[in-house]
Length: 110
Image (cartoon, rainbow, N blue to C red):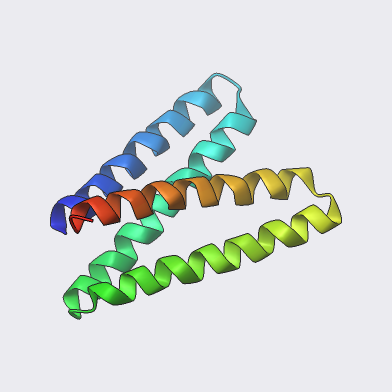
């Protein structure tokens, strides 16, 4: 699991670097989405680290489910309000979360 967490931290760092480069190129919208993705990887790395310390790696999977439910509900609310920016942000979070789930499954040998 340590390699899994390190992969999330590396992805977070790469995305933060990309966001900074995009801001420097005056590409603010793209920078926002890179930052959103980076935040998802950071949150997941932190939560997984805490769950590992307490020996509750199954709890990490439950947290991923919780994030998916909350962000999915937020996406649905944004769609009802026709809030294009919020829709894009929530979709970006869910896409990054799907990648975290795939990495988690691979780390567990699934």
